Image (cartoon, rainbow, N blue to C red; front, side, top):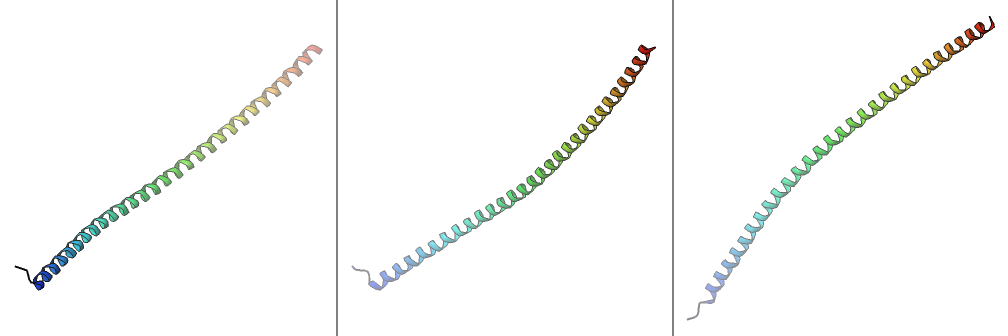
Length: 108
């Protein structure tokens, strides 16, 4: 007994339709999964950008702090050098004074 061609053709068409429908469903599911993954990756990118911006701000603050500390230390060093120079001048003046006294004392 042979199945009529019309029935075979009908079932074949239904099978093709169902396969295409399954392919469309599978493609939609894959597209949905890819969209979720894309959204997750976009979120990660935004988080990383925020972290990078914060890290850059921190680096700028640290650099500024280092520059300020360096300037402060340089000023202190300059002040110490000037104080040392004043003390040296005072010592030289006292030595000159003592030297003059000695020469006066020796002359007497």
